[in-house]
Length: 483
Ligand SMILES: Cc1ncc(COP(=O)(O)O)c(C=O)c1O
Image 1: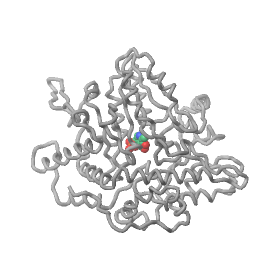
Image 2: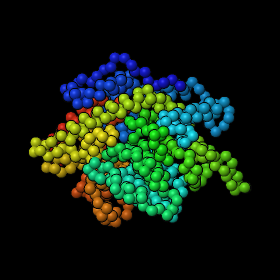
Image 3: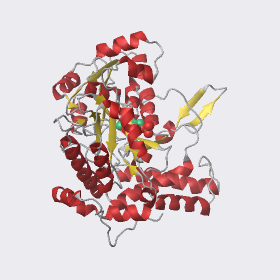
Image 4: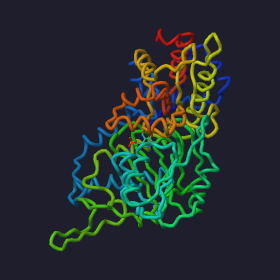
């Protein structure tokens, strides 16, 4: 398969903003990432042609035009059948499925002796596989950080239904990092069952905090299995599974390279996989099943976890996407994201109304150490009252700026950052048996019930973040009624 990107040559540098010089003097490493400007021009031209300021990379990555071209050519020039057979068209497809599976392991430096790659619909599908198959029982514990996506939170329902105990370990505002003492206490807590799972995100989709991967080994040493949610981390950070050895890694490929949607992976450690019990069998997952004999045998390895027919035509696009990221280079992507996020943090953090009140409050670290390219914040008017995050989004929409608002499916992170207490939530939920999001908003209307999220990624440039800063500066000296 051809490599996706070839973007050497003269590099255009965005000079249409006065502050670019100032930015470069603070973040000179940005200049080492100029190859991405060329890439953006050649393969993501639609962004600037259509005037989009895309700042929702944590929601979804963007695909390059070449990725689509390569994938389309592959489909147009070949005949592919369902890989569950041995006929020529099926065989051709099977080969590409094997290539994609191997490429995923290679990309994450995961030894095939140690790990398998199970294709799923998305990260949530991978998390559900763990939840429904992990052998939780009485005396076992599911431990997870407050800071988690709902698809990790949802595993608690599987754990509880099988009699396990669920514990949440907090993160501490304002930095939103792990409360290390509490976590160690939880990890040290004497367990009476044999199957205990600790789940945390490598990077928060709320605050951008990168939780230390050292917790994986610390948890292993204390007898835990570890689920690392890599969905928000892997788009701009290298995850090297020869250096860290979580038992389960979950991710969605569209977050890395935009296309295809509908494919994710559970990268599972073979030694722990053997203790998973699937609650059912399906087409594709069994080597033998019998009606009269009333029995079935699951495939060993990945196939035993892939229900029905894979999204097989999309899998070559995963290989193409991974090749694309490799060609651009994680170090380059990472450096660019660090520079742009660092600048935006400084600028937003320093934005003041004329009376000295801050315009923006950032939830999470203000420095770039151990954090990624996601910034969660709220806007405040001149008198210090928060501005509804949905109003901020509406204003951004008018300028073709794509951001995300709400709690980003990370309620624990949101509740801690926004100071919403367990008591408030309990009384709020007690009032309303059927709750819609607007009911929830009204229930805690004296506080902000969500935040604004800006996230940079693969082809972000200085213009994107400086346009967001200019947008934020429009809120200076506004009071609530003027917005
Ligand atoms: C940290 C994290 N985990 C899991 C998910 C779930 O991903 P998906 O919606 O692709 O299943 C997301 C999605 O935003 C995420 O950011």
